[in-house]
Picture (cartoon, rainbow, N blue to C red):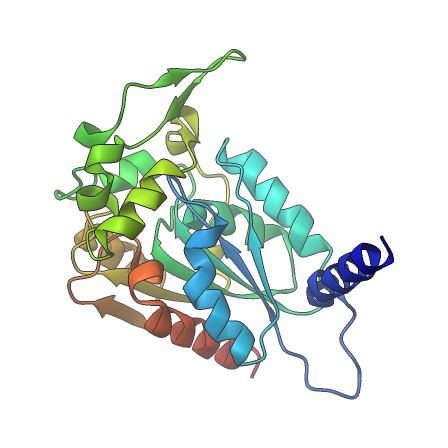
Length: 263
């Protein structure tokens, strides 16, 4: 029992380090807060987390509820409120809508990184942006919506279509696991209008795959240009889960954002 309690204490200390007050005598390392999108979970950042932590960055991979832009943004905002250091917010897919809403409320958010992500303007929706340009093939791959007892509907990608649609450049075995563990998003969340666009006042960086079938590359290029992206990286042949298939360039862009935003 003593060993169990000791192990728990060590684990909590490690998790809490991201939220600790930075030492005044040391250079402040920004905390990287990663926000996953629809049909994924926090483990989709595992490869990126390993690189960032190896390079000394404290990291928090938030468990995005995927219930609605405003409520999800508040959830992430609560996490950011507990961090004393500067923060770099990173969003994947629908997570980009969330960080755009969240960051508008916090002065310690110094940079935004969009990873195959939506960067909506006020009044826009994720669904609307994905259909703004041709190329998205997500709709036909969705399973019949799951009615929720409290109202609304949950959306999933059909497991047999998940690999080709969502993660074509990862192994079949990994895609099968991702399909089985995918997190649903409410239909309402994808159609909820944005009320804040933090990229208008906080510097942003963009990275996405050239073969993204969820968000057409043309849409990502449009959003990056509109946001006056400090740097936009396109990974040739990469799918929507570019952070899973190409964690190295994603992590390097996040680190560049962290460095440049604090100058």
